[in-house]
Image 1 (tube, rainbow, N blue to C red):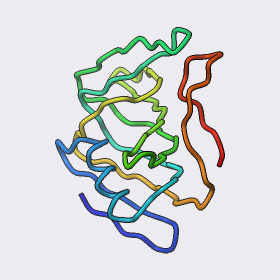
Image 2 (cartoon, rainbow, N blue to C red):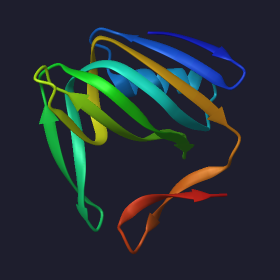
Image 3 (cartoon, rainbow, N blue to C red):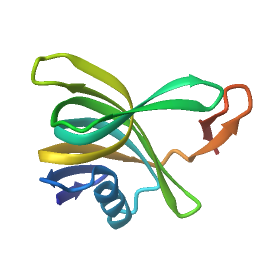
Length: 140
């Protein structure tokens, strides 16, 4: 993993076989990210898990073990209770150019990932939304 920070902008390069989420936790901790916006992520993932919302706080996970192109990923990160909570949506492409998309919950780097994260001073958290069963974005 490599990263550089300039002001509120953090550019990150992840390497083969690194766990996407564990690596991002390390970068966020080192850069003291409380709230961040992932504005760009490209590269390749393997062992990616996408979740699809099926209602009232329930998700249906689908594991994609094969290497897939990470076409796009955006979302946010919030540090809450000392832990990092990532909410990312990704578009992945197979070699056939077929794409799949959803809420990314797992993934390992295949070859490389390049990410751009922006730190924010907006105070935000995640709280249970009773109507949907989701941990929804809230502002403090």
